[in-house]
Length: 326
Ligand SMILES: Nc1ncnc2c1ncn2[C@@H]1O[C@H](COP(=O)(O)OP(=O)(O)O)[C@@H](O)[C@H]1O
Ligand SMILES: N[C@@H](CCOP(=O)(O)O)C(=O)O
Image 1 (tube, rainbow, N blue to C red):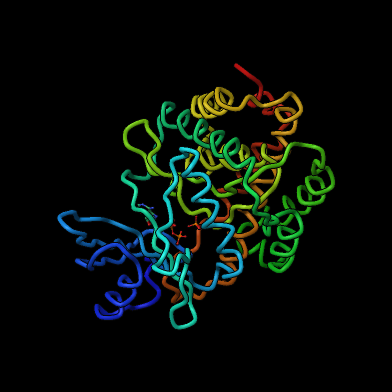
Image 2 (cartoon, helix red, strand yellow):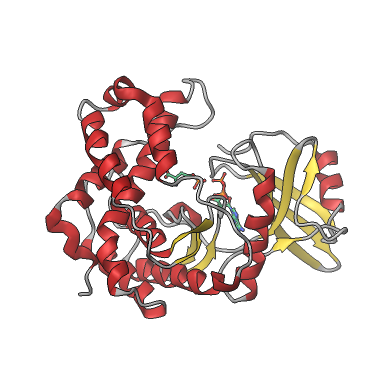
């Protein structure tokens, strides 16, 4: 469920009237999503029906970061990446404030999020990610990764040994081994660019084997380009519970990426470590949410162990070869 704020019909009509998109016909809350409130909005503009996504940013997104996220969408869309454009209001602003919260109107893109990707879909996602990395090279915005090594340590540290052990008896030992090792070896000399940093299947819209939309850029930042490949690999190439690695999805994702932006030898060599970092990053936020989400909350916390299992997988020396070309 992801509509945290109730908006009445009159309020919604007033909000939409601030944009030059015609008159409001309908607005339906969207159940998917976790962080923000989203509505699918339809308007009538002359003879045409138009569709948009209205997003109200709840407390997980800093308003000061919105120009980075929203300008990035327009930058990438202008370079033919499959991302939604933002609709600016009648004053030219990409977001508005409404009762202390920020709102943005975003182009609706067709497509669905797949839950059991095929190799063809993984290949298309790899290619779309590479397209974003290339198109982002001349984006002027700057934003540090707020979910880097320091944040993993803070989030996992706040869970404490007892909190981690309550999730799984082996988890505290895994974190004690991996966190210092991965942070201590984190590369500083690899190419950097704008990265999405959260390209899970639920943030990709597809029609058949075509990517129609990359969405939810609210963790985007400037960081190691190959780290984004590692995040996407961890998100796409395993069963949801992290128990089963899917070699055919891995090969297809990497081949799709390489066809658009070939990975350098140094990037490939770093991928096993970067993938351990990606696993720690999602293990950290999930473990934190697991320990801190009240039982009666609207959202169900995601399983931290799904990323602990990926971390175990990537940390085995015998698995480093999966990142080498077939
Ligand atoms: N531009 C878009 N076009 C079509 N559907 C979208 C678009 N943006 C978001 N959605 C829909 O809204 C849902 C939640 O959006 P998302 O940005 O992932 O929210 P959250 O940040 O809360 O996780 C998506 O799963 C998708 O169904
Ligand atoms: N992809 C993350 C959760 C982030 O939520 P999102 O809805 O903003 O993508 C995870 O799976 O842990």
